[in-house]
Amino acid sequence: MASLRHMSNILMVMAWFMALCMMEGANGFFVSTTRFRECAGLKARLGRRGRPHSMIMMRNGDTEQRASGTGQGRGSVVIAGAGLAGLSAAKHLAEKGYSPLVLESRNVLGGKVAAWKDSDGDWYETGLHIFFGAYPNMLQLFEDLGIEERLQWKRHGMTFAMPGKGRFSRFEFPDIPGPFNGLVGILRNNEMLSLSDKIQFGIALIPCILQGQSYVEEQDSKTISQWLKERGAPPSVEREIFIAMAKALAFVDPDKVSATVVLTALNRFLQEGDGSKTAFLDGAPPERLCKPMVDFIEARGGKVLLNAPLEKIVLNDDGTVKGYKVRGVKDPATGEMQESRLVTGDRYVSCVPVHIFKKLIPEAWRDGTHGGDAQKFFTMMDPLEAVPVINVHLWFDRKLGELGSEANNQLIFSRSKLLSVYADMSITCKEYEDAERSMLELVFAPAGAKFGGQSTQEFGEYEDWIGRSDEDIVGATMKELENLFPQYVGTAAKDSDRASLRKYKVVKTPASVYWSKPGMQTHRPTQSTPIDNFFLGGDYTLQRYLASMEGAVLSGKCVAEAVEAKCERRSERDVSSVLTIEKGQWPHRVRKLS
Image (tube, rainbow, N blue to C red; front, side, top):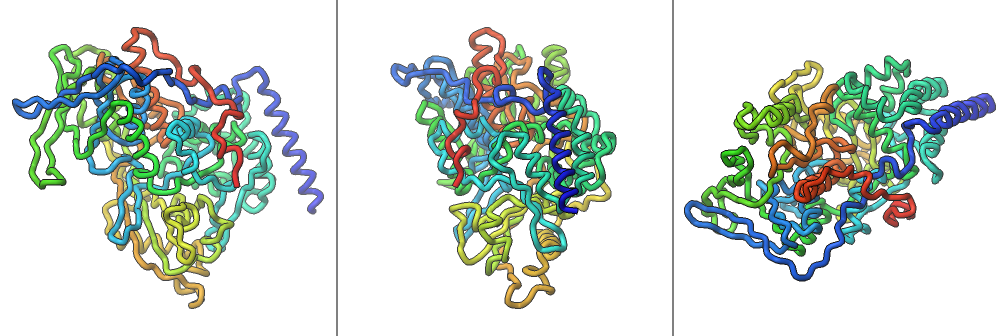
């Protein structure tokens, strides 16, 4: 029997290899590094001497407040939002000699990667943030900031919890070129997929392999669940792999996410040998990533202001932006309420989430007052909606056995009804280390029965957890853990092994990333807009890396290119064609892991 399985695996490899070879000269699904790896680029070689001042004006009532920035005379850019997209845009603009001013509504940096400390000094985060080898723009950002060592790379593979069994199943990826390392990892694991499942799944992928990304883009009209059924993939492939993958990517099940999104992610992970390698940041994102970005920006004449919420986009008579009206908030130092003020510059960027930006769009842009192009562009985004998600933090009084061991110093795919992915942060993150006790950070999804937006859709099978109490959410999470690890959690566990919950923290985000349901690709806007001095950034804008940290960082880079192109009166360059990262140029820690 073992020999038969061995021979079948060999035949499987040969079949996949022949299919891969057939793509020679075609627009292949698994392609070379230089094809898709966006880049390090758009870095102007600018000196720092002799910079003239660029003025950003803040009008408060009848009094003008002027904030001067140093630049190379390229002008000032006011950016709304100090998440990864806004900070990335400001970073690249500052490098090019512009004077960026970033306005953040809250008192914390990071947007969707924000984090806070509790009264014990423990961090709790908006989400569980994972960095992949297939994130070249993010990796280049770490290199530019000189903080590459803050990424803690993990052993290459994917780990899945086995519900009801109290253990894990793992796909180990050997150190060989992609996609063959992924293929070997799949073939080696005989616990989650049978040989027949693997063969049928391989056959299902043949159009992707032969026709490439153009085929993948055409699948946006259907869900990944529909695509798998149409392609004849067995139900076990969706149940064992794609439920976890869809919830990790989009916080929803496979029947509610576009096939294009999931297949594009699969492409990114498989096209490079290191694409699916994962890393955790060594601490909280606002301090360990966002703060170095702010330091970089301000060292080059830019400025980042907290507690400066954008209230209104004020227009000139011709429809261009006159300024950002910033709502007055209570001064955290004095407790006094500040007045609203108008912040003006030469150009403007919105990097706020799409559900917030849609509320800020001036009616004159939407109703055709300033032309049909503007009307079409700004109403095009109406169907884009935001997905709710919940991040749960659980501090236990002891290690959760195998889960808290070095063997599972990894991201874990839960494959449970309510949990997407999780990790024991006491071993995965340096700042959160605890040799004696586990701290689980878990993504609770799907989190809502309604997904927001102008076309709110209800799902009867989803409970509206976002409106439930923290106690209810933690109780449901503990029940899921009891099913996953009955030997450590719940009444079935031995007294000597049972872990008790010391404390918890729940972070609810009613509107997180855009809902990447079928048909949404055509509604994602470009960074350039029909308004001459206005630009858009954010992971929902059109770029190759979808709703992710990499997508947010890349969108900021695209904003800087769009501003520069308009300033120089030239067409925009494709970011991927400006400079690519060959594998030998990858940051050192991606290539050599401990």
